[in-house]
Image (tube, rainbow, N blue to C red; front, side, top):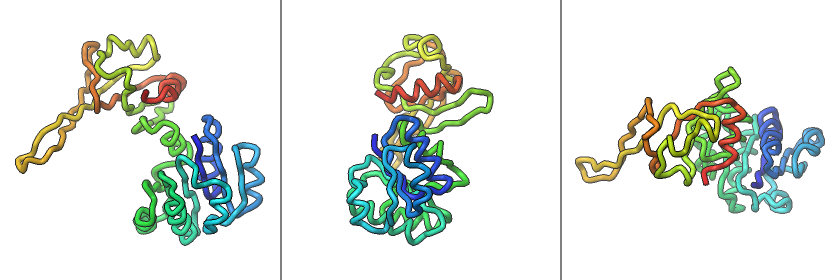
Length: 230
């Protein structure tokens, strides 16, 4: 996968190198040449340019990325203009950092699909969500273990927990299954009701639309996430 990270402050720098460590190709961009020099050996491509210059962005191939992250911090104007340019270039997935809720609203209006606030998400977590979009939530327990909410792989659909044998094959445990039950409202509108099975048995069957709550060692969780949702 190919990503662009625009803005190499503490957050953007960490995000870029984490993506690269996970095997992604990364175009790291900043207007500060010192930051570009610092990261150039850690990512696929590092470029010093003004991200509000559409021609410059096009010249380095930003229009071809799978996703772009606008990690610009204090320069709100540059953040908004860069996001708008990325949308004009046809970038399908734009994630933008915001310092305030108002800035976040504006970023969404000009093209950001998702806005992140640093008090909630840091570079490693954002990198993880880009590399493994089938993972809805990832919580590090601080004991060498993690808990994740995971969209089940296609190979799991229609099979029971016992048939898959998560503990033996993957070294993890399923501690809950979140199911979405379709229903029709009094107005005749289609919706769904969320039910959580917090004591799943070996005979419970995994169905399309389920969310698995999985716990295991960090190593085993990473292995499971890297296998993707297919």
